[in-house]
Image 1 (spheres, rainbow, N blue to C red):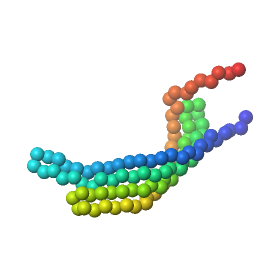
Image 2: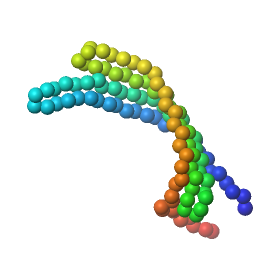
Image 3: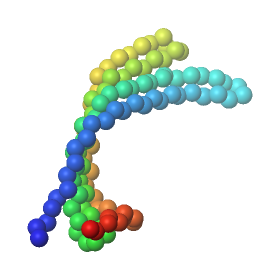
Image 4: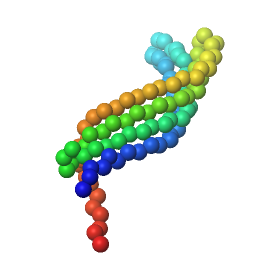
Length: 102
């Protein structure tokens, strides 16, 4: 029986927002609001090392459009961004489903 290397690929959508503000009894200020929206492509693998231990690797690339608006400065920015992430690690399998043998 040969060892297999389960691999996967996937597409996704990303959305996020960040707001900055300060509200106190003596001072109120609102900073920039930033929103981003984009797509994600990821690929990875898992390789069993022991019955409940797996080696894991993944690469994810995203491209997004962002918009930031700062009311106090009357500024408005738009830009295109990208992000790349590489992950290598060890996974511990805590719960594994059972399959019925026929």
